[in-house]
Image 1 (spheres, rainbow, N blue to C red):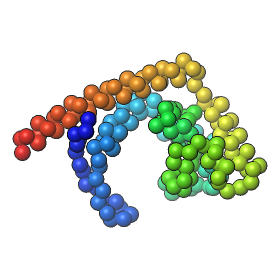
Image 2: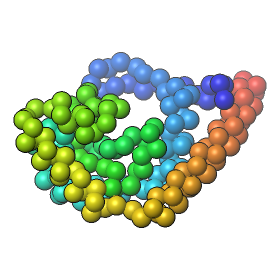
Image 3: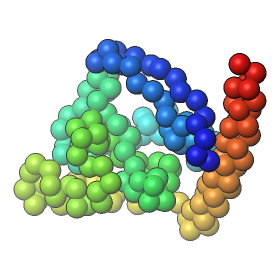
Length: 174
């Protein structure tokens, strides 16, 4: 799996710099696409999240203008830590909290680092817990999704292996 899949050059509109799609990003994209098939997060789900959090960041409570593209659908438990893509694992986060600060922090600990006093923090934690409790899957549903994700992971390895072979075939034709 250490072979390079491909490199594409893209230019950022903001910085004007060229960036390359790395093989590991391409592999991650394949797995993400397969996981989206079995555990989708729909536009309706996004609307529901926006409504529940009343266009405010779940972590810092800043207002987010929906048209601004500064609102992120953050995973409470990261996919890396086996968090699901399901609506019960998503909250509205501002680009600052999600993009610049939270990273892989536990969400409850992270809230305590955001502006406000302990009462504000408790209210935000309570709002998120209330959200999760209204969207929760049964243990059977969670186990099924985790099983499907495991199968998707295996399938992505198969797809990447075939893709790597086909790329090598193309390179030999050059």
